[in-house]
Structure formats: structure tokens, C-alpha cells
Amino acid sequence: MKSISVHLDRLVRGLSKLPGIGPKSASRIAFYILKMRYEDVEALAQAMLGLKLNITQCSRCGGIADGEICPVCADETRDRGLLCIVQGAKDMLTIENTGGYRGLFHVLGGLISPLDGIGPEDLKIGRLVERCREESIREVILALNPTIEGDATALYIARQIQPLSIRVSRIAHGIPVGADLDFTDTATIVRSLENRTEL
Amino acid sequence: MKSISVHLDRLVRGLSKLPGIGPKSASRIAFYILKMRYEDVEALAQAMLGLKLNITQCSRCGGIADGEICPVCADETRDRGLLCIVQGAKDMLTIENTGGYRGLFHVLGGLISPLDGIGPEDLKIGRLVERCREESIREVILALNPTIEGDATALYIARQIQPLSIRVSRIAHGIPVGADLDFTDTATIVRSLENRTEL
Image (cartoon, rainbow over all chains, first blue to last red; front, side, top):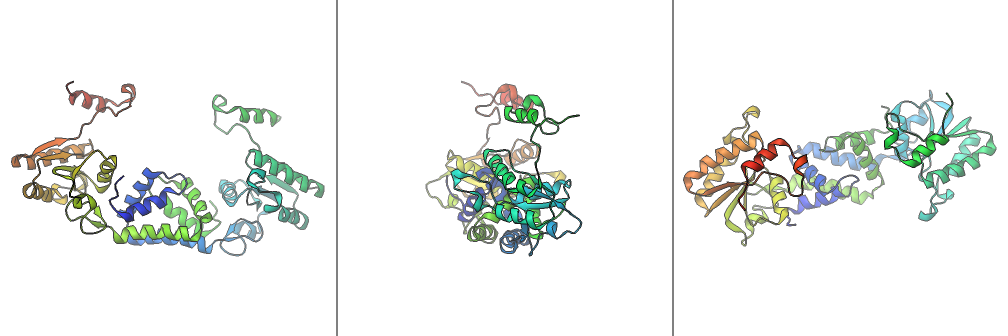
């Protein structure tokens, strides 16, 4: 592959490292950037750096925040008896954006994964148990992915919290709404049978 | 949609404007950037601005260049009798990256499109005719997209150049290599029949 411009190549290489962007998309985006107004490119570059420089970790839930505490933890109207446990800040945002949850969150910062050398002490599980003791939480909802690591982490957390006589639940795993049984994988169908609900 | 961080929102909004990136991909990329090292984010931001600041137009072919002349025009080993006409610098790069073309390029900077108010005088067609007169070009290959605008532009250029007794050709439009006739659209099949080649 012959190079026409080192500046173009540098940007295409940089963009290709981002998730979901291959060399073709990267090239397409680079040419788009070439046509953008300089102020807009500068704003985008500043937004990238601004994110890295200004985002902090919420001191209560461990999610992302612009200041000391994130807007969810700061919101006095939320149900402070419900605590939803998520793997990362992205999952917190995904649930938040549905608009269907009014409780608080706790971000673990990962999942227990012995293969990757991540044990319970590497995650914010100790802080979670602390919160369960200090705050007036009546139910902990585990919203972890249904993988081996997610299952192991859910089990571990459940064992830590059950002695505190707090209800521990897990979000339902089953057939997605609108999906076809015929196109659903075996593991999901088995889960949906196990977790069937009475009508 | 509740906002967790204005910095995150700003970047997601900025990224969503790029081609092929929707709000979900933008959010995924933003969280990836959040985990990147600051130096790497800075390098990416610099690459964006560097592209805008340093890329110039090649004074010969009208494509992109880091300096006065692009590497293709500067390369003395290229076949200077062949001139491939493309719509934009991106198409030039696409053809160049195949490694199958050893001639020179001429970038029009668009296609004739009366609906968008783009006439021949808005494109580098005058400069093309000039090049055909001044340089020792024996064949002009039109590599324009097979759209109404591409066809009109190809026809217009052919009429301008034919009086100079330079051969004018157009790249073949037909069934893509490896594609199935059954999945090919009617217009392409009709073109492939019209442009059939003798064996």
C-alpha cells in the first residue's frame, strides 16, 4: 500500500484502533474530517481531551462523574433503597438511558475472572458490602452479563450480602422482547425456561 | 435521556456526526477513549488537527499532498501517458491501494450535477484539458461512479478531450468479481451485457 500523505496515514492508523472502526471506515472518517471546518475538528479533538482530563470517578457509586458525585447519586428523588450492581460505567448509562430504573447504582469496575488474575479484592465489592451496611438498602439488583465471569461474580456478591438480610435479585435473562424463538441460541432458551414466570 | 457527564455527552455528540458512527458506536468509542492513555488520546487529537493543518492540494493532479506535489505525481517511474480521472482524492487512494495502476491521476473535485448547481466550470475540467494539451498523455481513463452525475461528467469530458486525438476510455461496470448473478441488481446486469467482452 503506497502512502499519499503521512498525515492521512497517521490519522487512519489512530482511528483504526478505536472499537468498531476498521481501516475502510477509518479512511472514510479521515476524508470526512479533511472536509470539516477547522473549528469543528478542533472542538472534536478538545472533546476527546476534555473527557480524559475532566471525568472523575463518583466517590459514592464508582461510576463516572464530572465532579465529586455523579448526578444519579446526587439526585434526592431517587429510590435509595434499591441498588443496581453493574460491571462498568457504560452499563450504568445503558440502564439509566432506558428511563425504567429509579434506584441507585454501584459500579464494580470489572468481574471476577481468575484467568485474567482478577479476584474479588480487585473489584469494588468491599465498598458494596460497606454501602449495604451503612445505607438503608432493601434490595440489591445484580445486572451483570450472563457469562461465566458474570455468574461467578453474582454468586460471590450474593453470598456476601445475604447475611445482611437484604434481598438480592438478578435481572432476568431470557428471550429478547420482539425476538423469534427460532433464532434464539440454546443457552438463552434454557435460561428462559429455568426463569419462567407464573401468569 | 439523563446526562451523567457533560464531557461524555459532548464527545458522544461530536463522534455521532462522523460517517458510519451512530449514537451507540459513539458511546462505545467514548468509553474506550476514557480508558486510553492520555498520550494516546492526545496523539489521536493531534492527528486530526495535523491532517487539517498540513494537508494541501497537489498542484498537478488536484489530489491530496503533504507538500507541493503528491508522491504519485512526483514518482518518475509512473507511466506518464496514462491519466486516470477520479471524482475525489478518496477514489484516487482506493485505486492506488489496489497496486494495479501505474499511470497518473487527475482529481475533478466533484461531478457535474445541475440539481446541486455544480457545472463543468466548478470542476477541474479546464485544467484537465490543459494537462492533455501540455503533457504527453495517450489515454484518459474515466473512473467515475456509474451514477447519472458520473455518466454526465464522463460524457462531457469525453467530448472535450476527443478533439485532441487522445484515447478516452471508461472503467468497466459489471458483475463484481466473486459475486452471484442472482444477487446482482438489474442495472448492473444490463451494464454487464452491454459491455460484454469477446473471449
